[in-house]
Length: 302
Image 1: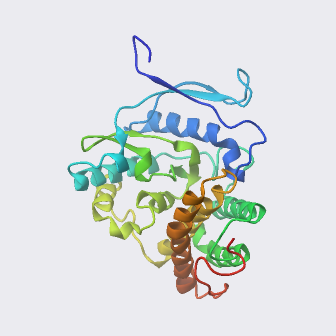
Image 2: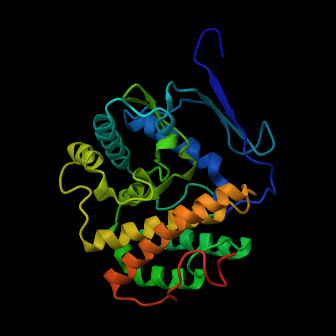
């Protein structure tokens, strides 16, 4: 801690060559971009970027120096008034989604960005499926079946014509609270420029946004109706974003060499959630492109 200012946090990425998912190669640049954009255009409380060595000019691999924010992670310190906090979170999410982006996709290599959302998203999803195959991830549905369903649902992505700032990891562990006041939004490393609807995959992790009326009320207050409306076309897109997030959760344990307990938790929770998202895509697109197997069964589950 500095004697004349806030405490600082230093974030150093894993050494080059460390096993990782493809999208994780540019996380430091993405996190820096998220904090700078949020600080410049919104009232969302984010760390201040003190210095970002994104090209490894000072330290091999680079680093991010930022201020520490007050509060405790939401899941460790439930607020006294949860409905008001959920409403406030909805308003903050709407602010983020009002920030326009330069191009669709991630802001760093290996993804170069795209002029349209279907190209950006399908490229990212395809890379995650390749990662799942490469690491032998224990998925409840074969990667090829997921790819076929995603292809059937991809036309729905064309409705998104303007890139917006998306955090994509807004679960309670990345929201800081002091009492029932949100004092920090952290870990913006998964950010991309894309469909605001994608953030609803993590805002109510492992459940649907319609199960969180206070969050939706706050979002609509800030963004205006018909923001966050969930017609069938929007439900297809949201199912794609949920499938992508759960695919990441199920795959990342492998390069990270997570504990058996973490693997078991993820398979128990994210596995069925992935199946549910794919069920929605099948139902709404009329596509039958996968084998019907229960999570935890089948030759592709390892």
